[in-house]
Image (cartoon, rainbow, N blue to C red; front, side, top):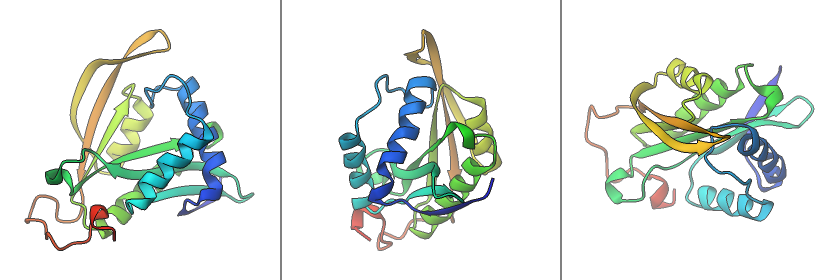
Length: 184
């Protein structure tokens, strides 16, 4: 399946919302029970992109959005500012085709270029495919939180994975590096 990766745009929100809707209703990656509406998805997109975090889409040859990924703050306290959390969602027909790995690789590259030093994945439902994609991208297991969510009539575990970006913890970060909170 051929695809290209580009920055997400406001015009993509309806397709992004539909991908997320399917994931909320049928999957365990998100612990939301009811899919958010289009206005809420627009607000989330605006919050992430206005903070200058990367938000990207994989687009098929026919122009449809096959998946999307973004980085956002893991926590908002200042000492966490060199850490980002990744999120990746794929349309059902795009799963298992390398698109998730390609989106993650691009997200890693963009976050590294922005000066972030660590990326964390919070994998809802401890989904084996999500764990495998992150492991292939160099993430290491950071822990497993048991029975953290209850969805689809069962308890779900959450897996935490982490990957260093750039120099990671090998050097002190440069407080002058323009991270997202500095409105780069």
